[in-house]
Image 1 (cartoon, one colour):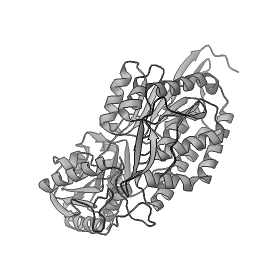
Image 2 (cartoon, helix red, strand yellow):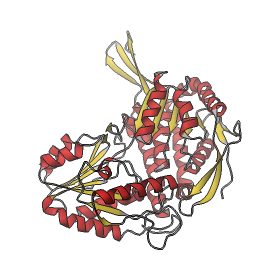
Image 3 (cartoon, one colour):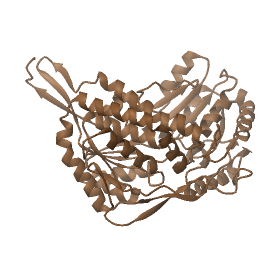
Image 4 (cartoon, one colour):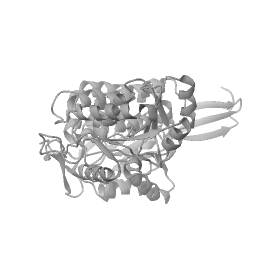
Length: 475
């Protein structure tokens, strides 16, 4: 079990105001692997006060000074990457290979991307010969991050806030807090001034709500469920603070008649990645009727061939889901699906040979219609729903018939069709033919998938106010 750590406030580790212990559970074993303290109002107030006190001086530091500190942070992050991989593997169940290469790698990739975007980023822009537009840090930012891609989300929020001259309070998920504690160590080692970065552990009802409503917080950046995003928006409304949200998804993966022969297999693999715990997972596979039977068979074979095992094992398997609450929710929705559609792989219970840990069978449902519960709710587990379609128009209609709008997918060899359909899909991102997004690409969604953008230049601009100044004489 890991040693208990306190909160990071004003450049030092401090004990919580009151004892409120919370057990962190290793989802591979269901055993306690760490204990943290959950903060209360006094801890939240102390962290916000530290960030407020540091804002004036930090916001006026030079771009060069902030760049140097961020470069040092990246060096430390890379040097201690194995520690970070092990922390994330233990707290949220990512197998070690996935944790090292993708969970840790996502953080370093985004940090490097911000540094590249920051090189040419200007905080002063000429509007006319006598008018200047200034971009200025918004102030104290509350960063509330999830458990499914811990460092990906912490980096996507903390680094652009640092770069733009904001100060911050991070509340990582109480379910997976170990990576956040380690990141606070990295920030301290890098030498950021006291109060620029603060971290308080807590749950959503406690510290999360306190930060969202706090009058001295200027912005909340949140990643998590749509339900929680709505609650945060309501709590923030009384103080009219900016709220940036990256929420849930129910991505459609449209496989047209002329798609790659193995499109269904790659789609299923992508759905099951990170044990299905990704907001941008392609969980609805829409398949042209001419390819439908083949796709169902291929997806079922992929599910049955996907090994499930402990996070501590090496290999390309998938691990457990993060918690008992998630396991129970997924089992309930699988049971609902078995009464709605045709189960072709997986189903209820743990995979064979696993009698402890929050392991879920990779599951595939066929003959799904878009009105079914399993096609509408974000299951957040390794569960795929396959829906047939006959025409391009029908595919677009099904894909857009969802309250979410984060990421959709298109598989076709027809370039014109790919561009045409991409324009009509109501989502913040459209991935086509397995081509991933470039470094710095804006990550975010439409509708109930959120309202902000993260990564690169777009991510930097989320943390800035815009000021117009007239009568600015030419220099």
